[in-house]
Amino acid sequence: MRIQKLVMIAALSLALTLPGCRFRPHTVGFWFEDGPFRFSSDVAARIGGPLTGEELVSIERLATQEVERAFAGLSVVVTGDHEAFWRVRVMPMLPTAKNQALPRAGESLALGMLGGTGAVGFDFVTFNAVQFAPTGASRQTVLDGIGRGIGRVAVHEFMHQILGVASAHNDSDPDSYESGRAERPSQYYGELHWTTALPALRQKFGG
Image (cartoon, rainbow, N blue to C red; front, side):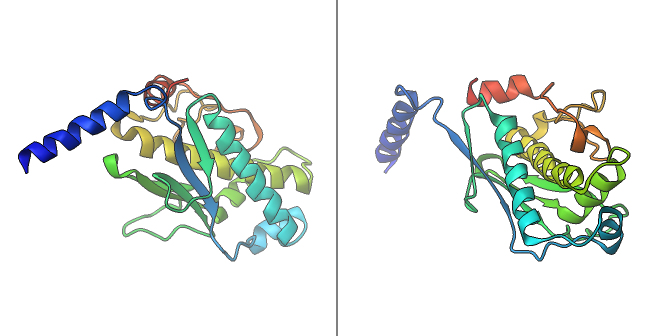
């Protein structure tokens, strides 16, 4: 039995060193739950009415594009697979944790060799997108901000899952994916970039 195990380990090690295996694409799963997704009465009043089905589709599309953009150039494939190694789902709202005083945009659980799982709270992101919208912003501008905001929160949660304890926040750069604050204009209406996490992501995935 011991010899059999050693043979299996040796075979696995050989497979991982073969050309094309070292930087084999990894997948991250990102999707919206079935909902229902709605604007709060305050948000709906401020931007001109309740969320429509067509608008939700556009938000989902833009959020997914943001995740794809963040991992572009790395050996990572974004998919809607609910069984992906690392996965983040968008929920109407995050459940309130025990002793949790403040709402939050996202949460994650890094599971090391077992991957990771996380979630984004739609209600918290939509509220912030309205709060930080430029003066006189159109409804479409705010909807786009919601989509970007959701995708960027998901990227931040993926970072924690993928890098674990190595994924420290970088609150010194408000335009970074590593910033631990979702309460900032650039999260919804600016351009974000990688900073401190990028070397570790490149080491893990190549790029």
